[in-house]
Image (cartoon, rainbow, N blue to C red; front, side, top):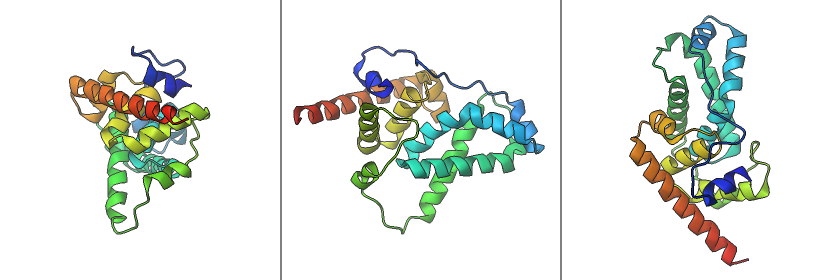
Length: 197
């Protein structure tokens, strides 16, 4: 019920079970030197946030998991290139976004699936509540890519809007307005669905 409560509460409540990871940037140096334990530690710190972001891009559970795997492999091969900027998660998300769009360009001539088909066959490993699944499917189907990223990073990963703005390279006011617009769309969509029951 975490997701559904986020969309119907007026205030911006702090996450109940999750807070954004505090990533030691020294992990990248260790990963670059072949330290498997450092990669494992990075994985456990970032996997939930990266899953939310990958899902916001791909709109598909299996593709999100595949994108996560590719991202961690890319980190493994490029960790030695990491330059400390104070935003390690933004670097990871940039890798994921670049990999996603590279794959999308390669698949440009492949048949595009209907969003209704995507929603029908998804299994969400982090979302077990039926109401949350319904909300997540609405998020994936009706919001723009940027709105999906903002909503999922906030609702699933627990990032504050200022952190999301930094990660996505947006202004705070833009992030807040897009978040509010997305919530309005979701409330309308979910309220409309409830009327037909």
